[in-house]
Amino acid sequence: MADFGDLSKKLREHGDTILVNQNKKTIRVALAVDALIVKAMPVDTGRAKSSVVVTVGESSSSEIQAPYFAGKKGSTAGANAQAAIAQAESALQGREFGQEIHININLPYIDDLNKGYSPQAAAGFIEQAIRDGIATETGVEASLLKRT
Image (tube, helix red, strand yellow):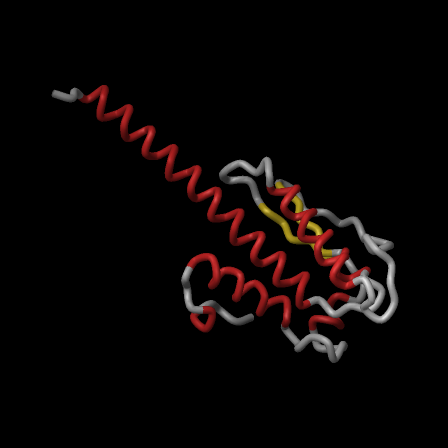
């Protein structure tokens, strides 16, 4: 027959499992949101896609001056998207439960892009990517998530 010590141990183990699984889910949501932002980001030279940078713990105010792969008229869109997504995966590998995740986009013209300045992306594409990423990974209907 189990005693309170055994019960306490099992509850701690179960609690640890919940935290580990919650951390994994949080990382999956962050990666989904990041990938959707990167893929939706309008592209000419590749700088905007390359400027989507994920950090853990602290946000970054660094502005990316050059893309991962320089191009013209979207010629390196795929390569820059892959590099930006790989950066996010690398940044999140050591993330521990409770650490903040920041998806940084430090471009002087990001607001213009998100307002629909480029015909390549609808206005509000960043907010839509956030809603879609959360919905995809949590099962919450995107239309139920608050619109800003």
